[in-house]
Image 1 (tube, one colour):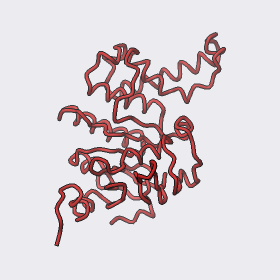
Image 2 (cartoon, helix red, strand yellow):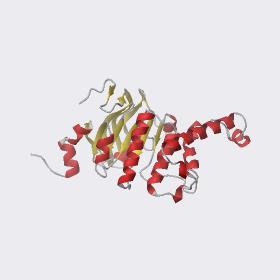
Image 3 (cartoon, one colour):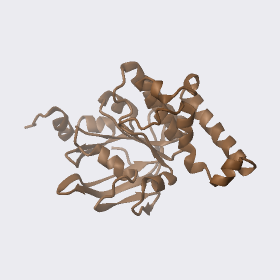
Image 4 (tube, one colour):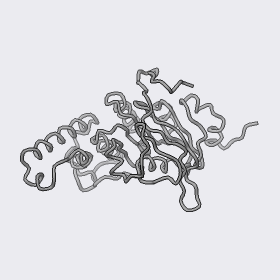
Length: 272
């Protein structure tokens, strides 16, 4: 196992830095049911960190804790070296954390451009009156935000559909638009909840390429949930494995792949 106390460069040249976020002994309950049971792991700057496990393992619950949708009853979320108090999702977003959702959450009647522009809301400082008058600072701010959005649209190769209502798009392109909206926020940590779900092979290849490019060109730290193990093993620097709310594995893809407890959870077989 690699020494994670110091930054290192992976075999394909990505730099993995110091700890960006640490989940310390997280326990999350819904009534008498423990969705997450005393789990600890970290996310390092510049890495692609996968969270995997069978259905019902608690993966989405963990992502919801990271993004502020859920607040754990026990444990601490440490972000950039400081304990994070309970926050609402919009407050977490202001810290530089953006996400996509397992079920696409876009404004279907709005154009691709307008949907991606909503990702810039955290960068808009002008008040409603200034925006209504649209002069001076408000005009400059609008221009800067539009330029940032157009760069994301170009990066994800969706220029041809920028004025198309999202409701008219096929599923794979909707997923790409949702990624664009998250990137428009310029996150330090990008959370992807099953970005490949429902995609065909070609769409998965495209999304995998974009995820690697976001990590490489923008330096964005990525934490993702994904069921396609081929994708996980190809994309990830490190993998944490959950099963019935517990952590059963944590390490590089090769270490996780050979972990007997992980094999049991996925294949349902026992070892002597």
